[in-house]
Image: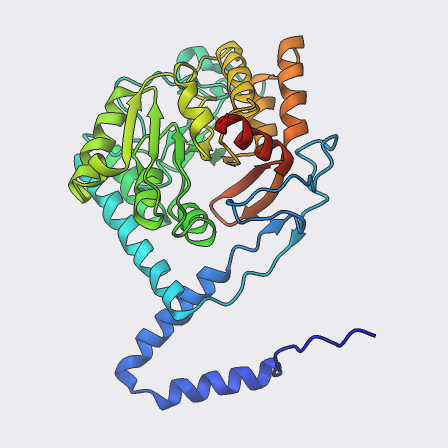
Length: 396
């Protein structure tokens, strides 16, 4: 029989609690608050419990020719994912994570200082509201039981999830914008409902997870599609060793603002690693193919028209780019899942779309899902034999 592996000795929870209380008792009273803050940071660090594919190699570096995945499995099936308890961090890792929080808060303040309005939309953005609209006469109907008009669709409020990351921040923004959390479904009554909140940016906690749990020190190239505030670019520049960090957005105003804020934080960022492009990502597929890690925080649903056709055309281009033999991409990080984004626009029904989707699903699969109170991240990885073929093709 093979020798049993040694496991670290464990202690009962009650004993661990007693030891923790003894530690609190042994430090100076003035240091108790610092110790409590440390415990809070540790709890927050360990809070998101990911679902991961146990067969997936997360090194992002060396790819062999053996394919560990069933290419016929639909990439959105999550049965192969299992809960993985995050390891207890070292003091260095926890300090880095705490510093990240402070740095993200500083960058958010830098962006907010330069925004003319605390709202999440700029003047050159065309918002295509797929399901909701503002309260207007056209959007009301008479309730059969009342002579008062009945509000039939919820008016959304745009809240940038990076800039306003907690309840106090959101309340401050609502006061400045003269907005409210609830709306009346029937004028003059107490029949109220919660207003829809729409965010178009990654939250700070999502960025902490992505770049400190997965890509700390990574030399991969990054692309953020729909970069807006530049938060993903700032996180990649601060916590990875990447020399190629790219953002692209339809809004020239957001691109200019991101450039200004990144330059204000560190002028070298815009000269050494980061580039920001204003335009349609469909016109810059070279960036898609050459970026090893791509981030998509639902960049298309609300900005490419109500009929879904522009989105569907763009998804076909992206799927083809990610599956190209010479493509370098190995990781996609999305909010929400690609299946949800595709369902919203109906992508995959037309023959050309179905072929592109089938090809994508043969090469890519979900290898991790992590959800917390304010985010639900999906990580997609390209099959190892496909990446090896791509690497060999690019060297020819």
